[in-house]
Image 1 (cartoon, rainbow, N blue to C red):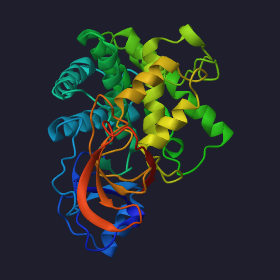
Image 2 (cartoon, one colour):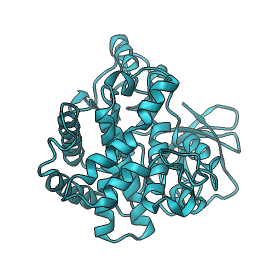
Image 3 (spheres, rainbow, N blue to C red):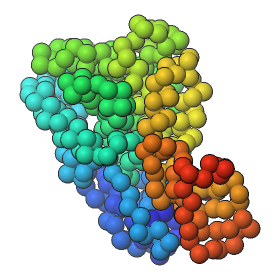
Length: 358
């Protein structure tokens, strides 16, 4: 399969991987043939990239971080809880049994991640942006847990970290929808309203007796930055709990790699570079280094150019060297078509990826 930007799709191409809405329902099934109307629909839905069938790479499997059942269960649980909170007249309404619901969900998510040979941050399934908040919450949870596993946290610590990540944006349920879903840059006043979601989320979660207080601090601190430029309290360095720092990295990465009406999604390698600009100022350098080592910066299916002039498709990622994937070469140095063959960049150290074709 090949990963293509939606604006490069052509009628007659076939969907290679299912596309979901925010409820976990399939909008476009695998194998569906694209028409002009369907391509226009994808553009309207603000989906940035899709997998399409490609005869040169149809034998390539696209790994998923979660089973479909777990992903759909998670999105439904997040959606149900957040919608219940949006309609609540008091901040604690609707939180009865929240801990049980999400504790079971965390067990399923951790089981799925533990079944991966070496958990990695992969490009996630394509969803519409009908409600970005639900998908974002799940993605941040997955990314944070991968980092926590690599860091060596215990299962108990991972449960708390994952719960904090899953619920880090719950304060946005109390922010006006016109602000949360505004298709453009927020005004200064709107941004001040939006910033309040951290403290609102903290108040919501700390009132729930069966939720660890550290989960509430995840909601409070995920926008703090180590140089004190974050919010809401302008904390610096060790004043920020390490969970809050992990969430800050994962939250920023998912925001960068998500397509929005007002902002085109970055590809993973672009987002990692953007995060590194803040190394030692916004984010802890050691945390960014671990993040870099656990993210598949060149997703399977993406078209890349090599330093010797060849080009091809990423078909495999070695978790020990995720930035040095296996590339199936389809074009020679002069752009000529060649019989497909594979170059393992983890072994061919003289070659590097010089560019990505979207």
